[in-house]
Length: 606
Image (cartoon, rainbow, N blue to C red; front, side, top):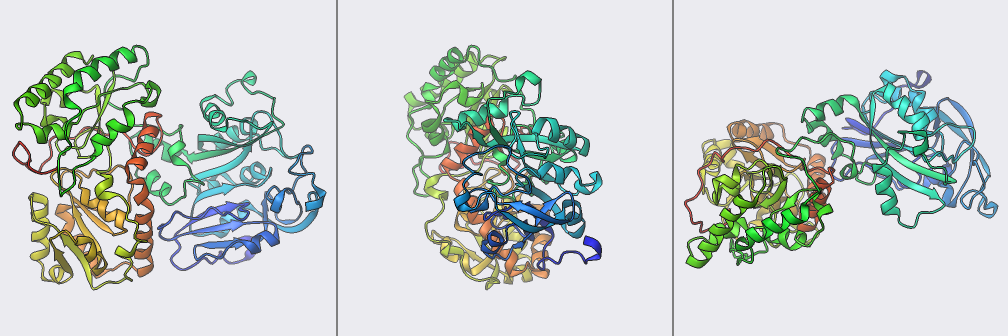
């Protein structure tokens, strides 16, 4: 602890900490709905620290941080003091030479050693963000290796391109940070330029090139045309990297969801391990010819009338995929050749028109004939049985990567349709009732298949669970959300369900029930329970109910996730996937769903 002082007292219920050094007026706050997470922000300028809005999950300390304890002279720079530093500017610039606003004025401030701050916090400091105007490296490198490894993730401001912002201090990405962080056991996963002089007109292109280029590979690879070039560097502890290389992203994802994308832009990280997708690697040579082959072959599986489900006639996910992606250039698919087909609509239309049946069957055979075994293809399927519902041969092709919302493919997608699952513009009123509520569980819909019948039997067979559950079947189920704390949302005919995402869009707290394996695209604010464990899990929620504040936080997390669970949000994640980034990942292709499918041709949507 700090020179004999007691450990830092944080709000009750705190179990993990975001440590933000140099917060200015915009501290790195936990993501909406994060439970038990508190930000401890250090801002050296007293007037700025006093102006930071008060929040229940934020502790502000008016002090500078460095490699030492004591007092320091903070030089005030830039509008609002945002570039103020314990060090002098390396050269005159518009951000440091305006004496009228007080540039260069010195303010004496207390200085705390970063190592002692870490020692004073008992809770898990899982994220450290530094924006210390040149003092970042000295402070972080002064921390004992074992103590620094209490931190899981770091975001640090560095200097790049052989430029220097402040004098008399080391903070260079290649010369200082990379060697030191390798010794400490941290891996650089992303770099993002944030400030450069001369200014860059096309910042997006500059940032993309910055990430791709080997910044520290060779001396001649580091240009010197910049007076200033600052970049945020993102680091992950090496044991998390080893887990991810084994295909285990659970801990990394769980921690990442506690952070805001502005502070931890995980969707942009190019340096994370990626699970290997089955089949050949993507290629760009010959792409145009291969695309023309499959696009012509699949013609009989397009321009079909979207099917109807629950009085909704689309567009469904496959329709939206075709509309959004069919005119994209080859670069958008990362070298994979897209196959655009209305797989699910074809299932519903099969048997309704002989000529259409013949055209669809011909397209299936043509696809199998033209698809080359050494070319990587990609398609999107909504159906719960995937491509096997049309043709087992297509479903077995390992070089056809299937983005699957229904639960049979290589990459899990959310099962959404903007007409059904789009977030509601109701201000969250559908789920705004205070906690705890009259009932603990809400069970909606009919027991139409095996998992839902088992869920109904579990609840009906236990008088305590039955008394704690309200059941409803009808179109106005959203009006019942305020009556119960949780909504039981079992899988549908496939491994997913629209209902799960409808609940999230409304800000409800779903309990997702699966049988053979869960099918979720990434970490979501839902309880995930195997059907065999459902009775014990529900009894546990009754015996040890979550605190109202935790339930409120989970509801906020659901509402915050909802905009991502739209067509536009999904396409952003798919685009990142094709660039080997973002949360979507390949997984082993599962077998046929355990639940018996409905007889074909289908009369309802999957």
